[in-house]
Length: 217
Length: 233
Image 1 (tube, chains in turn purple, yellow):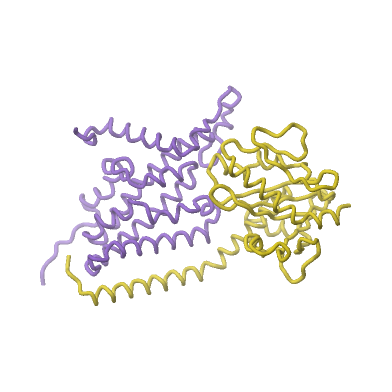
Image 2 (cartoon, each protein chain N blue to C red):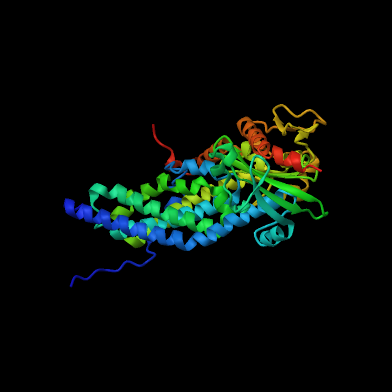
């Protein structure tokens, strides 16, 4: 029997799968994928966090399923198979939210369904899971979902804080009493365009700090 | 990548579709009772909120049973229709029927101060999807005691403002009848005239939602006109 050298579960290569998408390979700020939902669900922090968790579940599980089946999936129908797996996961998540987190599912409404069209997920399935084993695919899914999630949460933090003066629904600005000094919430932050600008600022800061991300002409 | 035969691809697709179908239907079946319960509680919270009783998931059912003393269905002639449960009437389905056949739900409630309130459910169209709400009328069946509105997909910060307290509170003490004639409450762009009992301010940037809401209130309440006129004290 051929002896296969076992790779440790969290080898340097696997750690990279988790860490790279957080920064230099971030799906939103570097690959500019999944922007649509980043604009839509970032008005308040709570839906953003739930969205991040939902995407994480969908992406990690779909990645594992596709990776486990990768050798038996016929190449000619692989995109359809990927879509079926993603759609199934999304419907499951949606059903569970409706049963156990009704208020959040009401706020997210159509966006949970739209996870199906989130480019990050199909992108990872096609680019990574189709060519790798389940465990690295699982880590790749977690890493990319976190990379997506922390941007979502960061953007929603600024939008909720500056737009409605609260954090996680807790009225910070009111408790600090800054309204008495003439401070007003910036209603612009609640509108979708400001999410784009916030994401833009994050991209700007990231590229200013990491010169290797700047495209050469 | 290996080249698979057509037969393999067919079998693979069929197995995949069938197993996914079984998985999804099982989940839907198992979670359905919980989901329906959530929808029911949500409706009770909204009905209570229209009579200015705030509730949450934990106490809505109890408060609903305490405050809502009767619910029944009437037709546009103002006569009671027997054998229909007011709570389970879907307005959207009713609105597709001819006017004379529509079931109009009515909830009778007792407020904390002992007043009897009539609560009427409404449903209409916003900009992106359905909007709905409940209006509670005081004993004269013309003065609004409170309203609650909600929406499926209106724009956050604009049309979505219809379900916020500052918008809803404007309806308090407005009247829907003037000298016995039905006039409804208008949602006025540019601001309601001060002191006018039939007007509230529209939402800036949410004109289509505001218009939809005005139409919903008018079209919903006018069906109850006969009943309200007959039973006014």
